[in-house]
Image 1 (tube, helix red, strand yellow):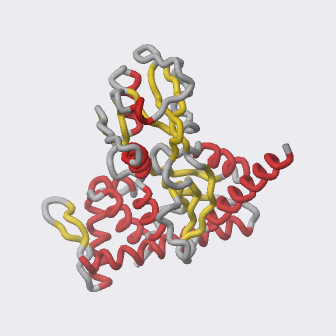
Image 2 (cartoon, one colour; image 1 turned 90 degrees about the vertical axis):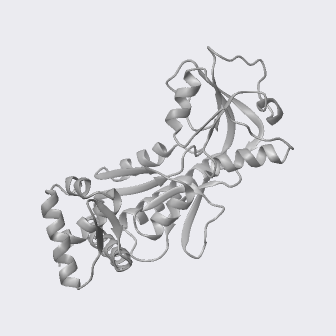
Length: 302
């Protein structure tokens, strides 16, 4: 067994496709299939369910896959630790992000990049549940997510922002004279909302229900890009974070605050507690902690 076989197995899990996994690993599909069969023979277990295409993993394969992820995390962590011992931090930080969080993630990436110029980043837009699962399975290094469902014994967290909401609209299609809106006023507007089940949408639904109202969106999507397209086309307005920066770069978009509108839980940076934890994740988490402490200190001095 070698480390590449584990990489191939993980790539197959992430792509769910033999050809795409082979392309990601820069090998041919027959080579990928052969190396995975060699791994199965060495372990004496069937790992992959095969038909004309990839059909998933066997129960044994799922268990081996969990070990493969831990071994790959330890392998990557070893090299990251060696770099840290040399006074460098090198590698790829995998960061899971919830859609429409009220904190600009590029602030974090810019901070990490300034401190560690050799870092690279992979960003994944996921639900809060998927982020916690990704951290648990070592598929992610850090998560930027809501903190209400966090098992404190399993994760460290750093609270970053209380996400407030506003109404995003295109001034070519809509006009408002008020400096802020209330939820009752939103009920008469064509709304584009994130899909049900996402934390940001759950907070919107809660705000409507608590006032005896029902959200009846014209458009629902799990894609922020689709919502922005719909707003720009004049199809609808959209409830968005006030500090998300989504209106920046488009001179026609405006963001109007909604009174008493915020998510049910604050947004935070999340790190898994159990080993193996990458040196990259630990270093970046501490950089964020120090930066937040500096911001709070400066605010107190003003």
